[in-house]
Length: 196
Length: 215
Image (cartoon, rainbow over all chains, first blue to last red; front, side, top):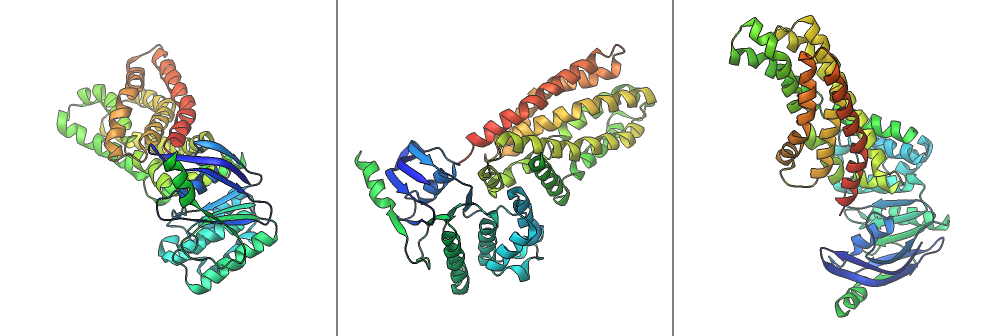
């Protein structure tokens, strides 16, 4: 995935400009910066959900995104709600079960989604990302609401993904349990946007 | 094709679980049972005006599910997650249109039978009414879905959807109710044309509306 000179205009305000990023297989980067600086917008631009105001985004491979929105059917059991996305992604039940296991959700698989707690919902969204088999993971605040044990699970899942040649771009205020990743401070790019 | 089937089945399942399928049916039956109280129990008058009244009821019933068609999935991120998988918004809307019609058209046509009995409609009128609804309900479903995509994310979208849909529904009402008093079958053909037009433009217009409404 490669971003070159990406700028983002939201509501008539230039949030940031001049963002360059080149992530090769196994590469990861962490977006930093205060609230409202445009971390989520950049992730949505990377996902292709928002057009970049300027610059180009090149992607090869599928994309998986988690943000603050659950996108699971509340009344259905967790396994069935995630199963809809798994079938849409064309992956089998075994892959989904492994993803549930990776997020320690197997015991909760038959509970309706509405019964799950905040952290459990977050883990369910991460399980969808893991099961999707997408090469590019875009994680928006993946550590929010997770306890220490779950954070470790997340770190392990990301490490496996990167070791298998995947790519991860995350926006997070919490330190994620990851060894080496590039760091992009959007504050610098926001300042560029203001001075221009 | 498989994607289409998965999306349609999920949308239909969601409609079933939210119990929204009964709303238009209950509305139609309620109107049909209130109407004789308003105009009196004169069988000849009821038989003459009842068919047109049922068309108005069907039209208004099609507005009831509008706020559950798109807004919940837009707010919960479902539409974005589907789009991430490289599935076009047009396909999303088309699948939703099929699911919405399946959950709206046939139940309404079945509910029309007891409603017609309440209004003392004769057999020939009931057959014309059902034929008209078979052709017209896809258009009503498409119109409801179209205004749902256009108003998704706006405040008081339900009221706005009514204001948007009703003027566009006038041709359907004219030709639909027109089939009842028309021996030549021309009204039925015009109804078919209006229906085809609405069904054909809804996936494209709705898909564009979802894309434009993305934040």
